[in-house]
Image 1 (spheres, rainbow, N blue to C red):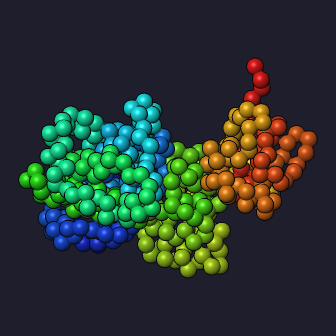
Image 2 (cartoon, rainbow, N blue to C red; image 1 turned 90 degrees about the vertical axis):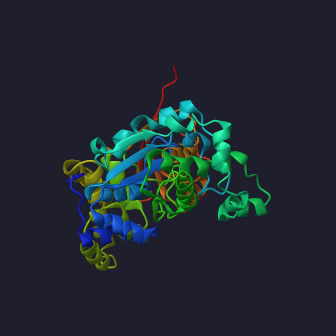
Image 3 (tube, rainbow, N blue to C red; image 1 turned 120 degrees about the horizontal axis):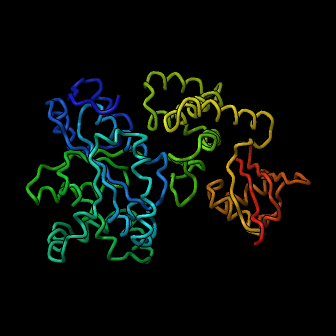
Length: 405
């Protein structure tokens, strides 16, 4: 069940709370005392709407937020509608382009719906950080900035690397940690959750809380997960499994992922008991497909329901065993003579032009048109007719060419 009112201080549950999917904790001893005290804590997680879709990488801190919620603590979800405009470059090797308000508002339309798939949104506090950040004047921003040094910012690995290589680091990038840190002050957070790439920004929250006379929040970081191509899951790469993917797409994507990520996905993205996951890990060498199907069922049921899970599995089995394209494969309308590579990247079917060229070279992309079935052998292929695509064994796309008006 979601969100109990009573504060639960069970030792085993608190131990798992602070270890499963956790990389680092700042202030752990003080946090343990508070968790065992029976006091309700305020647990903060912020996500910037830089993309319209939340992906499973985002589920790691969201599930940890739910863990705190199920122990009776107050979860505070912050939609970074203001910080999203500036853009965080904590995990980037280049300057992130600034977004405008229109783009942010378009992206966040379904954020509450998506977040509610993981936490009990009715028992959570939801805030948009523009509420307090856009009110700050230059004098107040200067007061916040005084807490930090430029040396602290440029010593971060990705920033130091860009400077060493002579690449641009814009002044606005230095402002992001101040804004995320001030969010902690605004909502008086006791604990902040985030990925390991957010380390500097979350520590900034502790520094600013101290300046404003608040108790410093504990910081709990989780790992960064790999996507379908074995590199960091990122919307910009198109290698994501999204909360709102239809069941068949979600199931198929999970079945196409690298085997070496399966147990990590079970651990971080489900709440299956760890002893059951240990048993599944033992089965991986003998039956990797069966274990992966179990993962696909768990995740589809989590973001949809058991009926959707069964139909998605039947669809995948039919396509996988028959070697064809499932009837409920994703459909996309395109213009005549569009580059095939652009379509596949935009739809998240392949992660990059490099992956597309490799698949073409390996003869792994097949096109089923009205009159013929053929392998795609030219990486410059343009769409000439409607038809079905099979990419490798587990990825599919139905292409519908728009009629000229």
